[in-house]
Length: 48
Image (cartoon, rainbow, N blue to C red):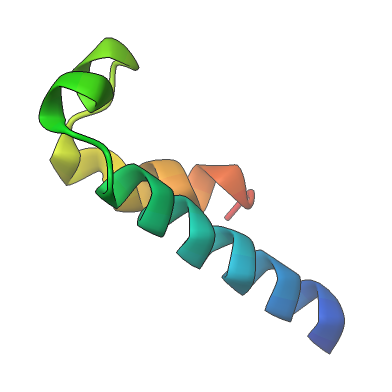
């Protein structure tokens, strides 16, 4: 994997964590996500 792709994946991972982290528990629940699942969802978003 090249450096640019790794950086973009890292940035997408961090952005996903940030966006989900700003949501309320109710909003996360509506999406079927528990707060403890945020890192897992972010990893899946970048295909790790």
